[in-house]
Image (cartoon, rainbow, N blue to C red; front, top):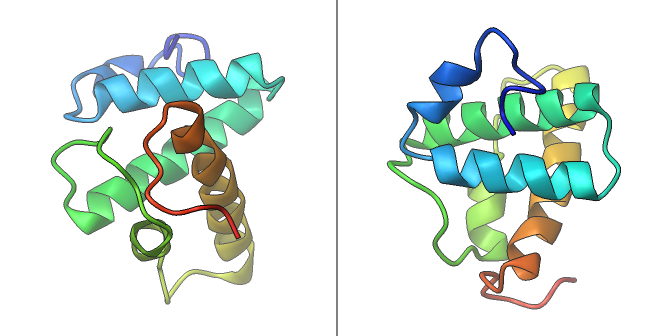
Length: 106
């Protein structure tokens, strides 16, 4: 699945400790009707959030507080902050589809 949004760079995502999470999230986004460009943007932002946080892997239960921490980037420009919020919202809906969200959505 990662070959579609990243024809040249998919190996970088596949070699990540979070490769399974990227694959599953991309497939979930595609099934939800997201465009290739939107999937690409969400995966880039999710990868950056996981990298900033030092996550070794993903797929564990995710709480609302943990999501807020993952996507917190105080020095982000307004445009980047908007993209991060969009990815956080999309990723917020993804874990419940896999039965991994700790708290009810608010």
